Length: 132
Image (cartoon, rainbow, N blue to C red; front, top):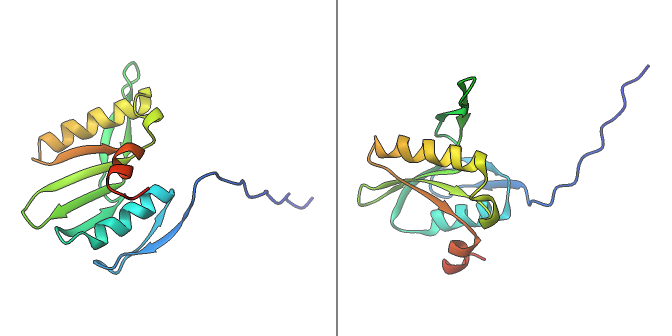
């Protein structure tokens, strides 16, 4: 019996590829917000380099079972003044969800030990930056 073909699920998110001007690397993004932020990073003269979903941060997803999972924040950005930031792009309504809080707490702790700043950027900040 032949396998049934899966219907491609339509997503409300804008997915695609973006080739970085600064690195020449092509990244696959999962939202229009991420794509616009990629363009912003490439055009910001203070940004020397950036990566997309390259940083790995482990966190405990279940306190009872001590299950360790991996979190890949959206961006790691390096600036000309020596600063570095780990950035996550999220809709405002998701910021207080339990899973997001676990990941962001682990990321803040991970960044603190390395002298890096952790930020969650929502549609509010993206609008303030003129990206939306």
